[in-house]
Length: 293
Image 1 (cartoon, rainbow, N blue to C red):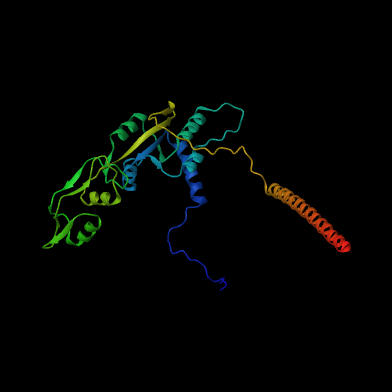
Image 2 (cartoon, rainbow, N blue to C red):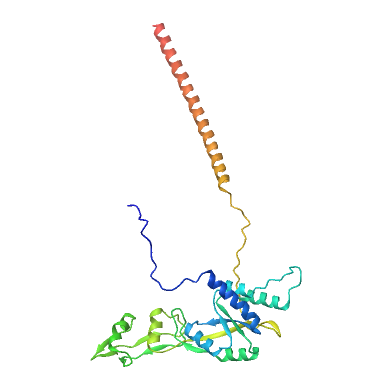
């Protein structure tokens, strides 16, 4: 059945797509912050949580955080000089070094606070957070058999689906045998991470690490060294043959195949002629025998 032209897909989402205009706005904001603030810090995040990052933004109201795509932020830091032959300035060198360090999950902090104040605050700040699946357990958690009064009776089927040996005893969630939630050093499964969250046992730590910075006074400085594996696209030296070339090759192969077939046909013709000559000779011999009789 042909498809109707009136059949159109309608998106029911209420969120707007972040297109080119949003990216251009981020680039303009970064360029304005580069002129407004004295210092720029490049940071990375351990155990990223949006709620914790909002708390950090609230603590630094007089500063500006950018946490988005690296390519967009790199365009905001890029400086274009009028004279290409002139030597790069201190600011241009610093921005270029910052752009080279922007690999992986990272963000930018624009502030007028001193470098000492920023480093001291970020070194001391950390927040406990619940671990997720794939995280290595920092300690062993075991539960002894008995009532689990912190859980409601309605959550008991969910606990059983997570692998816990539980049952309802007079409306109270009860663990009828010893259960090991996780062992130290082993990777957590999603089910184990959910159980630890229900038990209110955080094992992860949210922390911001300052990797490098650019200050108007000292310029670029690398603070925390990290192994950066740059994934640059290598240019292909070997050129692939074009379609006409392949067609020509195919044509050449077909020609060769045709010539081989023709040779085979000629050989077959020669064989047929030889067979005909043999038959004629045999017939002549028979005729001569009849004449002698």
